[in-house]
Amino acid sequence: MNYSFIVYGHPYVKKSNQRLVWNGRRSVRIDTPRYKEWHKSALQQLKLDKRPSEPIDEPVNLQCKFYVRTNGRVDLSALYEGIQDVLVEIGILADDNSKIVCSHDGSGVFLDRENPRLEVTITPKGESYER
Image (cartoon, rainbow, N blue to C red; front, side):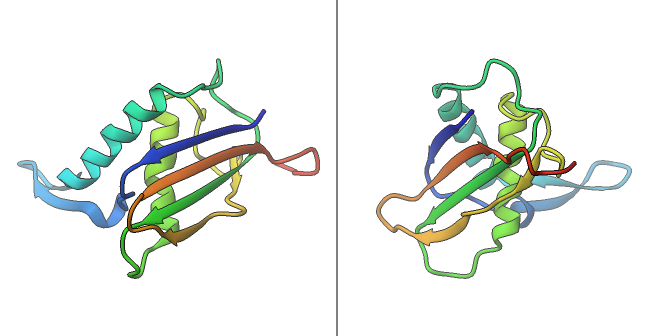
């Protein structure tokens, strides 16, 4: 079981692209338009790719290579949150907890001003991994 996906477009961090609004009883966080747009685009792009027939529920390495437009500081761990939520929502992963997504080996942030994107590779963690 190996799956690879590419999500074209500049990846946005979910955590820092939220804003607080008052819902009448308390403050709640909502996603900003930029993150919502990226999320919607990622879902549409991943629907076109070959996906597993059932959501993956075994230990995997989720390698995420984020190619961004600018050379500024980026919170890599915050970038994982958005794509993991998309992979669960679309049914590629059963969940994004540490028993399923147990590593991000080979992940990183890279500069590509002309072609920002996210390259995702999902591989089995292996027999030696203990839950």
